[in-house]
Amino acid sequence: MSSTRVADALGRLVDRAPSPEDFTSSIRTRQLTARVGAWLGVCFLVAFLTGVWSHVAQLPNPWVPLPTRPVWLYRVSQGVHVAAGTAAVPLLLVKLWSVFPQLFRRPPAAARARLLDAAERVSILVLVSSASFQLVTGLANSAQWYPWSFSFRSTHFAVGWVTTGSLLVHIAVKLPIIRDAWLGPEVVPERGAISRRSVLAATWAAAGVAVVSSAASGVPGIRHLSVLATRSGTGPGGIPINKSAAAAGVTAAATDPTFTLTIVGPGTQRQLTRADLEAMPQTTATLPIACVEGWSATGTWSGVRISELVALVNAPTGSAVLVESLQRGGASSRSRLPGNVAADPQAILALTLAGRRLSLDHGYPCRIIAPNRPGALQTKWVNRLEVQP
Image 1 (cartoon, one colour):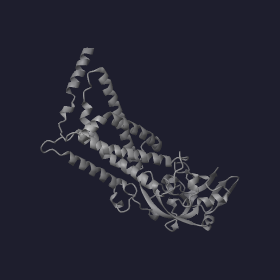
Image 2 (cartoon, rainbow, N blue to C red):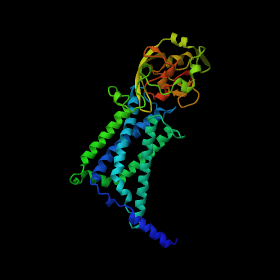
Image 3 (cartoon, rainbow, N blue to C red):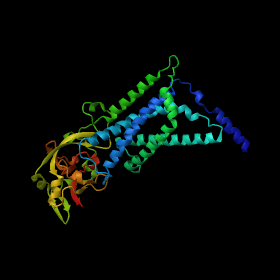
Image 4 (cartoon, rainbow, N blue to C red):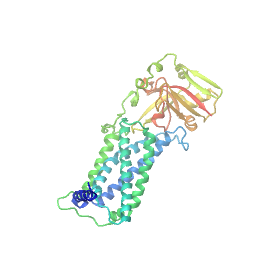
């Protein structure tokens, strides 16, 4: 086919393609886009900041020592993170709907203007793609569904920076338009058309329903409304179970009568049976379990302070402790208690929950429970503590 015919075919294709003027709805206005976009930006900013906190909290050696008080800080932070991400889903859909006609905007004729237009389109593509990736993978993580082979936590964290950076660039480029949309005259909808306020009210309602129905399982009083949540708060002692002993492959080892806990210190080590642990002074702490999926629940735990176990091997108070589980493999099989956490009087090796012996699925014969920690680091089925210098 000759170049002339190709050009003619492309020309006819462009002529048949829709243009922004073909979308005649009076609801799609800059005022609507600016207002939905503002709340969407707030949701992404909140999700980014709380996501950074969650990422740092899960590092074996955090960039800075994280506080152990208040004990509910991670619970609230992660709950807000999941709620903000959930609310962003309907906001993003409405925002994309409002600007959809601009997808068919013709490139400008001037070469320089066309280059700038192409750069803007690429930046928007990066923003939309990364934002969609964050929301889709975040929702999948909340449902504990992982149809991919990459690490969710590290990838979600990295793409979060891409999303936030591209969002800030987008705001800077569109700031004059955003300002005019907020301060300019109101666009009067056609007679009989839905008003902008109605669309906004429906959008806020959709965001609210999404949050309450799927991300409020950790909020007392409205937990029963969170019908789409993956964890209801039920389970032994009122604490949900993410992974059972059978799924972790530890049933036989955890119920072995000869089980011993090994504590390794500088130049010495001790081995304690569960009976030995029960004979030591017991500490009770009311602490929440809060997982990255967004659910949380509070339990009353009793056991031996980590600081007292550290003292048994003549290690100084404030030493970091490496925790190992009977579980072999998986992100939850090992964790590290930084020195300030190990020394906290509410950091304990729990033996009971709600006054009863730990259930097998909750980590029998013993598990870690410490304040202001992600649930994934509250290691279950503990069989070794190694004090680090």
